[in-house]
Image (cartoon, rainbow, N blue to C red):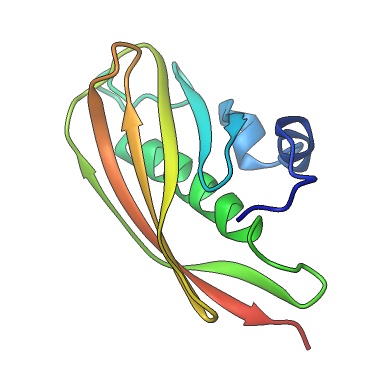
Length: 139
């Protein structure tokens, strides 16, 4: 499903000098139809009570879903942009890393829907997110 030239190294290089680099998001695995990444839970991603900020979880979800959608497209003809995202925060995290896995629900000609499941270091679900991507034709 994904472009064969999509490597962890190439994807992480695209994130240089962006929000993803600033908060430490790193892609760790590219499968045939899924993408995995991790994000540190530290001073950059905490809310005032010392827990992982829900918005940081959404940033991880949007990053993984957007990259996954992009990896399905011919970028000379199309690109993907976020249309809607939601997140259910299930379990708080104070430190370590959270891991996200983006998997396709629907990959159509004009829209895509991806589910992103986030877990803590013990494998417990911390957040489940769904992003809808619009596929735009280049002019």
